[in-house]
Length: 408
Ligand SMILES: Cc1ncc(COP(=O)(O)O)c(C=O)c1O
Image 1 (cartoon, rainbow, N blue to C red):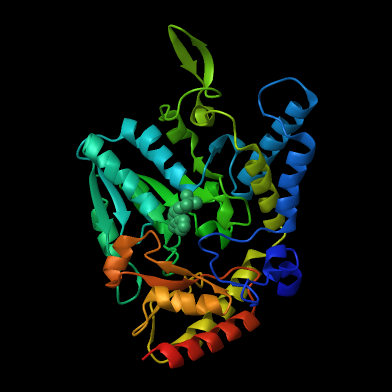
Image 2 (image 1 turned 90 degrees about the horizontal axis):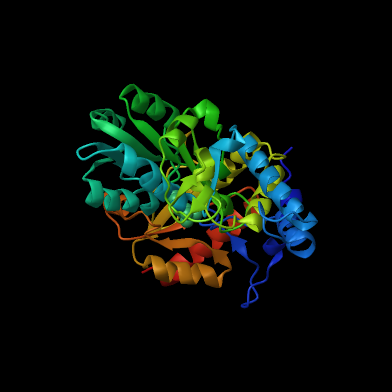
């Protein structure tokens, strides 16, 4: 049985009383998730007992730090069904996509090659490609949304593949919560001779992604959205594409030898990690995947869907609210974007904050999607494994009250 109260008790922050005396209700999980004590303790343990640099030095602490860093890599890679040598630590999804753009695409795409993106992409999967396009003349193609069904237009995707060198697609939209058919898109991209990058920043906290089974060339993730700390994430990349990469950030750690005449680099994933590693963060992320491995993701998904449907029905019944997401879709992760016809998204967010509700407001780093929806911004609730029915009910009551009182 899914015991939400037992899960909640592992997240100290969820007991927080805000300065205005309200109990925190945290609905901003797509921005960053909260962290269980298990993760916080693992990071504290490193800093209080074996803080040291890794892969340098021959003392006990250095050994312990190195072992912890690499055993975290093994746990994280295994969580994603990958070999540790295919996981490169980055600061998160943004840096991972930049790494693909600068270490792989800059060397393997040429002027006129197309990079196929979608209107649903986060800016992290748009701006690096715009920059690279200025530099090497790649053509950017954006697959539009099927607005009727609130999903990608798959016919347009198939057409866009002609002459493509790379596809970059978001696994699950951070705005409308739609999970894209990434398995089918991977097959189609490969049939067309293109590589594919899947931005799983949102997907990784809602389903168990298996890198090997998925078969994509690149998958990018952020630890902080899946119970881990900020400051770390990863690029999962196949041996084939890793062998085609050149250096991006250069300096210590990624070298075999350096002389005043030049340097010899390491290869594979080791080429792409430079400088002192993110040791505490990797240990925290390793603890997060260990903690998450105990969760039945199917049960978690069913729980979140139940809450999202309750929120969806309740919000649709409130005068003036337009909901842009459809959690009734089987491929929805329950993230709901909405707007009030009379209140700006900022005003509505402030009024909800007064009730203790933490949710996201703005363009969600997805301006092309906002343009496609014909809005400048939305309010967004994004749920995770510790949210409860009571929280949804109190949110609906507060939203209803606010809209009635201020919404004309
Ligand atoms: C779909 C998606 N891609 C990329 C990112 C960027 O992730 P990060 O800021 O952790 O690098 C986010 C963050 O919200 C996201 O939701």
